[in-house]
Image (cartoon, rainbow, N blue to C red; front, side):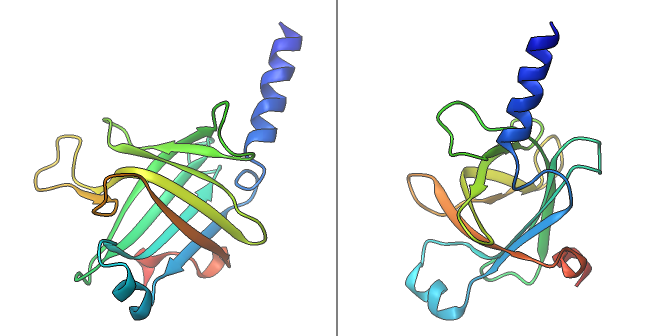
Amino acid sequence: MIRTTLAAAALLAAAQPAFAGEQKCYRRVYDAAHMASQPKQSVTTLEVIFDDEIWNDLVAVVTVVFRGSPNVYGNTLGCYPGQQGDPDGAVRCSVDCDGGTFLAWPSGGDAILLKTDGFIVEGGCGEEGEPRFVRDDTDGPTTFKLYEVDAATCSLQNQ
């Protein structure tokens, strides 16, 4: 039993070194040239704050701005260690009520990659109105590259 518990703790620690411990914030603001070259991309700004002190578990607080909208949308996703076959250090984060998931992992330096088939940032789970999803208008998954920014200045919702 102790051996199993120690193995599980070691796996958990190894699975999320880039995200556990202190609050970390990653952001990407796509410029006009990038957006013009990617007409199917709907996300103009994406920010993810990883924090393990909100619910005593690792969560991802996601905020996003979509093409053609001045509004900032957001959601909080629960995260857990990646699965066998995922990149080293990966975490999977999911929205309650089957609202989608993303996989995030270190990409070298101060960057992470975030891959998703889509996840809800507004609506869903019995809420009124059309849900807003983070995903591109493509047939496959979307991968975003985000860069670490100072956590003290991080939060699109406060701007």
